[in-house]
Image (tube, rainbow, N blue to C red):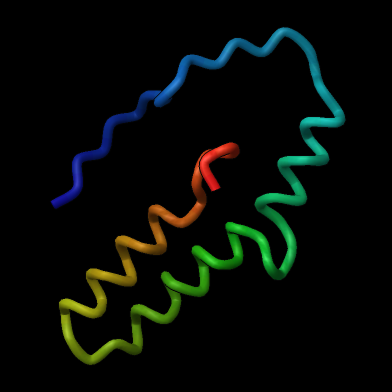
Length: 72
């Protein structure tokens, strides 16, 4: 069962743009070997799974794959 709460895990206060941090985020999430690509692979593979348990596992992995930075 999923409960969706639209709130941030950690409060974010943005004062100004940080281009170095933006480049770091793009390299972590983007690209063929990035976190976003891995999450999308799990979520698309779930449609070919024959059992509901396997679909559930791939859904859980795919939604939790993009980990916050620093926890990898």
